[in-house]
Length: 183
Image 1 (cartoon, rainbow, N blue to C red):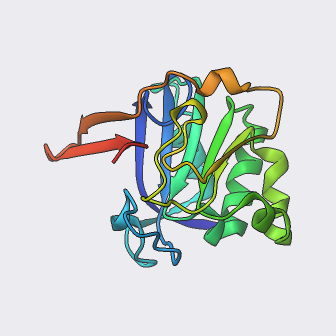
Image 2 (image 1 turned 90 degrees about the vertical axis):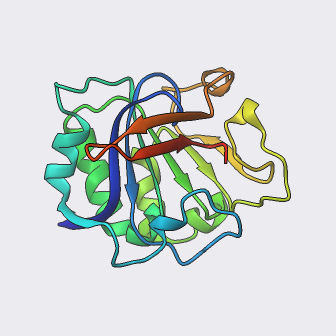
């Protein structure tokens, strides 16, 4: 199965607890005003990649990590590919998985394909970004209306406190990449 992604980043410290390998899904129709990642909105941007290859890249022995972060765009707008990726990550005994979504937890639970993803996710930060609502860094949420939902015992609320909220990387072309939850 193919999934459309915007970027993969390894060695991140500002996308969840510990050192993380991160993938941003491409495509989002929510288009929250002030979104930190508007370049991920176009549904045909980014690149298409096989889920198995994506899993291999996220779990590469050359880039060991404490966890995997899936963000976007909106991962649940490619829910079948997301489910396939989460199942593949579980087969490979991946470290804890954090997913960011602009949908509320209730919206995700009430959609059958999205709900099928939830048992494979350890923590979920969900709800639409609202630039008028100040961030709540104790929950690692970029706006106060968002919710941190712990879906397994692999994380506690304390794991999401005092995390870096922004970092800078250079890509292979020398472009600066700004990553994290603080815009």
